[in-house]
Image 1 (cartoon, rainbow, N blue to C red):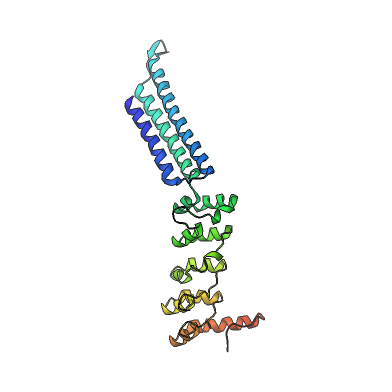
Image 2 (cartoon, rainbow, N blue to C red):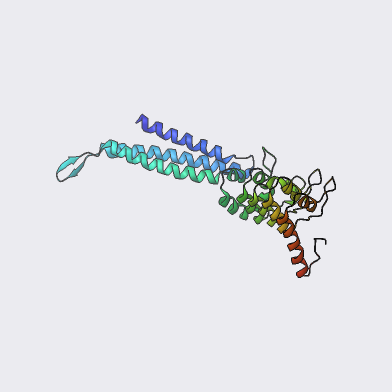
Length: 267
């Protein structure tokens, strides 16, 4: 019997460890109540284990009649069946507790974007909550982790990127076209300059990332903004004889004129 009790205790310890590892419970009333509920649920599981053990012993000790013969229920079969049921129940409970007890930041780090989205839809005020350890919002952490799906979801459900614009380095996304496209689609200004006055288009051309430059031009990046050295992105295209990009700029200008818009491309 000792081995059965030992397994039960080990499973309980594992469940609590997994809960705290994923949960990252914080010191507020809501999370305190959740922690109390989870602890109570684990206590009930341990009580269930004890009841199952006692029931198995009671069944094992009772002979029953079958066709005039006394048949004993095999003790090891009862123990194995009980253990399997307990393991399955504990696995289900641990999985549920890992999600229910997890903060939004834990869900983000564990890649549970869909579950995070459902929670934020019901609690949009948590979008701007800052993590206690890092002092950063969900959007900041998603950008740092280069998690495109999470960034897209957070901006879609209403995360504000305006407070981050002064610190947002759009040029860091040049080598990740999917992230760059996501940020531009959600309204991030492609003409944000860095400390040297260079826009993302300046740097895309400088590092010969023509795919990123192509995307920026298509999204309306200004080719006439000058950096601190007085050079425009158009100057860099001409210097490097990037004919494909120059043609794209001219095509954009013709399209804007045809649509009746003031062309951003100068003659």
